[in-house]
Length: 257
View 1 (cartoon, rainbow, N blue to C red):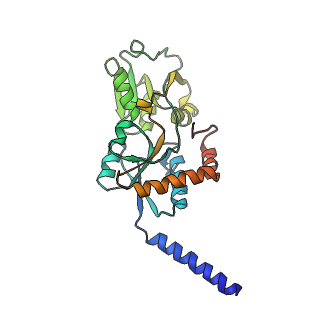
View 2 (cartoon, rainbow, N blue to C red):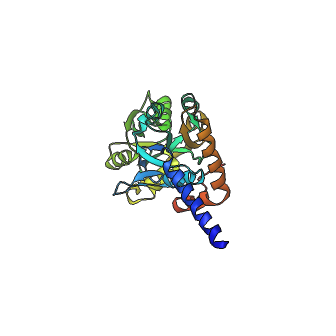
């Protein structure tokens, strides 16, 4: 009897695994230029907080997921053109983006801030930024914010990847950068290359720009798939998986209120 039951469980497991393998892959798109959230290691393997959260969500939802690379400004066009199925790239929920895509529930939420040299004496105002060179990642909410607020007085320089922004700040080709506060701290300020730089001005939390949190983005008619991810987000938050992953990267509550 026990052998029969064991065999049945093994067969059921094999059938389940085969069914998962036979599923049409859910293609997750990222630009992989945003450590520690998403990037690729020396071997080209996707790494980071976004990646581990996505893997946990796909496992919980029993989805066969695979990663595809796409430039940041091409993420939404590529999704709408069906070259990917889900954007998992630290994309913030904004009203503008809601007109084009369907967002899941958030999986983290952080403010945005400026970083400049500790001795630069820069103040965050139209007068303080007049003529200054501000670096942002192209096509992001940070790009939109500095363009709307300071585009008439400052020289806005746009980059395809956040690492390029840091390199130009270090080399003196930029006076300040603007981006996700946690990414700025973890990927730059807390590292050797960030010595001599600091946050300047107040944290920016305006939901018109910063949004309602960071989420996965899907095509608007993929509501059933979005709901699977929503259920998975709730489950990994409740069972401790989310906190275990977050603790590898952050010493604070990345999920937010």
